Image (cartoon, rainbow, N blue to C red; front, side):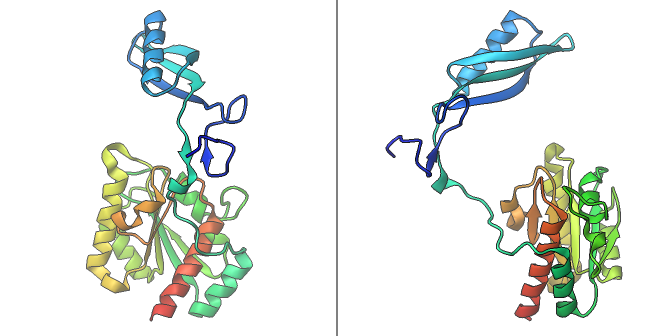
Length: 252
């Protein structure tokens, strides 16, 4: 590496000028608000590689905690050739093309069952994908003429999800997980995928997991076909389902 941060391959954070390495981060320390707390924040920032660092904001959170925003420069350089991501391998289709493709592939409606499993009661994510009102200017899967959507809502047990998916003859099961304490989102999803494998084997529906703390590279670890993270739109999911169903048909 030459250290030239103007190249497309090696990059540094951009603050006031290109390549100056300026970053901003926030955190909370269990220290009462005051000079000692700010000194601790600067010491932590230095250990994080932010040098020089400035506390640009701090305020007390109760008598024993302080919240900080720290601004400063890092020397680290990112080699973009080392970045590992899941690239989308299918085209984004408008609703009309999704409907046409599904009708041609299945000659019936594609059945999608969605739920938040375990104790997770956060339905905002699954509703954004499934409900007709949608997300980010896109209508949800209920809007698609050739998709039949069954939204089971929150706190659905894995056995109930498997039972309902079988009863509905689901082509795809979408599971949303927001609660992440003690890796609940990972454990719940692994339990779900194992239950479908045991109950249905190779005839199981497509399994899709989504949530803000999921990494799309985790699909194999979770035992699902696809993982979507934050910012996913209904159109992305609909396009993926169309692509995956097509791939399954070709494999038969």
